[in-house]
Image 1: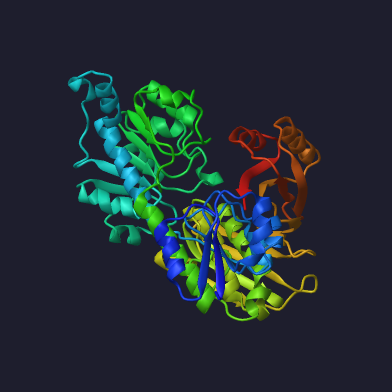
Image 2: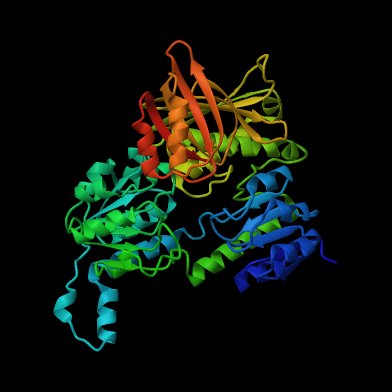
Length: 531
């Protein structure tokens, strides 16, 4: 009789399934395409669940998962897994964050090759019965400058391969220190310098507010007229309408796109009509080797956790043994959101230190494992990829970011809090949280202001002069843009007469709405954050 049963609910490589089948004491069922109702009927029989992107791990599903101990994602993204619900039920979430890195890097380089030599256009011409040799004159990569925006796992692989092509590599990344870039043989420059110098630009950044439409009209005007752009990172980093304008106005020479703001892309999208643009349907991770790799990796991780208790590439939990893990689980979600919040408050600033200050139960349980989740949340936002609590301290070390862990006496108002303090070359950012009545993450302090608000999925953080009419003007503007405000909380500074307001919203906030807010009288600053 099997000791552990595992359900693979999405398509999984045969190699990954065989690893599970061959493991002593394990039984695996491969059932794909099941509805949530069908999954709910059988999930109670399983100790482990493996998914890719199709199956949604919802609170409803988890309510029926009485035996479930671990959910494994064969890939990077975990948007289809409700992590807070998993944490509250003590279910570990794992992924395979590096399994697709080589594949995605290679696809970016393949796009660069195809774009520079006009290969797709030449193939289409020949298949149409033509021989237009003079029409498809290409460009060499040798001795050209490649600009990499985002020097994370994928960006570093691209840099290594490009140097093999004898390209000069420069990069822009506010998190990476110059010393680390130098070790990679890469010259670290600011974003404007990269735009002006690069012959080819490839993007490897997360889709966060700070990178939304990073490549816009202004950016394209600063690029070389013969520059080529490659985006195999995230949709939304490139303003697609601005890209069309830039190519039509001959501000840049062309682009290769693997990701789009809306997927699948509209067949009538203007990008698809431009000869200077080549496109692929989000193929960055789509290779036989990558799919085998992530399947085998997640299979081994599931086996190691269920049979030995080993956690590798944990997304919602650090490596903690015994009963402490169950008590810590709600604080893991709180810490991850606080880390993600300060990452966005300090976006673009060179980080020197991240400090975690705990009081009450957080201090008693141990600040370090809980802080590791906060660190994971910080790097998840800055790097644009899932970062486990186990990996996060190494990312900090690689970037020469100092970590500090402090335990303090609780104040007379709140017995348990966790405060995350981000120190950068430009200043200090803070966020303090606790658990609400129902165990949900609750914000009690932000940037030195007292706040009392649930930590919503997305919010607008606004500083403004404490004057009559500001709240009404903001509410009216958001309403006119079709943006629904679920909650609003204000913190006041009596000495400066400045207020910090947290507007929790349940709809996306477009750039034009943010710009309109910044133009309102008495508004000092506006930042859109997602948690």
